[in-house]
Length: 446
Image (cartoon, helix red, strand yellow):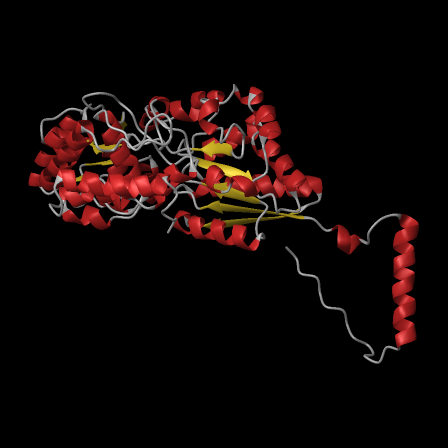
């Protein structure tokens, strides 16, 4: 955006009479025309979002925002930050009642409950864009207190990424269950290629450990969204499994992993498999990363298969990234207009294609996008999406469920037991108390 140049000062000695005369003429002109002066009509729409693991996604979003701005004679600004910075950035803008017009929300739906009083109702926009895109996948999941306080934007489904050459070396085939992965991970670790999933404070840890908990029949909250249910035999079974997975099939470094660590482990040729979206594969393909000690590209020996099944179910979650409009924005109508533009089928299609399937919208027609048939590595993404549920499942999304994620209660519970610092009962009782404090409203966000 071009800056306005400062006016040249020819004579700083301006008389009071001359100043008042000039100002009066200006006011008279405004009253006569019925319009504000041009500089008062300048409009700018600002959008805060998080950096995608597939950068082309952000480039396409910026292209669409620029295109919309040019067509509507609106200045636009897209600010992209690391996803871990979003929590504090949203809180500071709400506290100041000032900031961006549009904001990314997530990685759960709970932001819309936490910031319910500061978000614009989007019922009209949600109703406008859904029919054009085949309808929302699970519309009841996205309602917060019965209202559309956000638009579900995209999710990165979590299949399993596995090294096929190492499976062949171990005389194994693509596994289907979590127990299969324990067996293969144990074999892989013995030859220097452990299984990898985060057990620390990261979004990936929340996703994978919730997936395991549900697959074993456990859950941390009931359907009523108030009753904490983490203290169960199913939770103990899931925790015992994760302890075995950690001690027998993984390295200790997973306790300190961030959301990029598993990508690096796979692409460095170390990990036999990771539970992750397709971002690692995409970066390996783009950068032509080689299998260590060979001239073969590692992308050629990575396959993606379905998220694992447990003894009870096959279920997963992921980051539910959404977009909302602050009600202290002075450009609410413009923000709604851009959302309608971005959610047009052609624009969403281009955006999904730019992300090569990493960013799947919550709209039925987009699950059938051609990109998912363009590469065999994408074939399971729609299947994983079908078994993906909000992180609060089976309860509704609330500020409390979001806080459970933000405070990493689930990863800490699993890690305390996996590392031997607590027994399963001690870790569960600790997590239960933390969650009860959260759901009672006595524990504040970090």
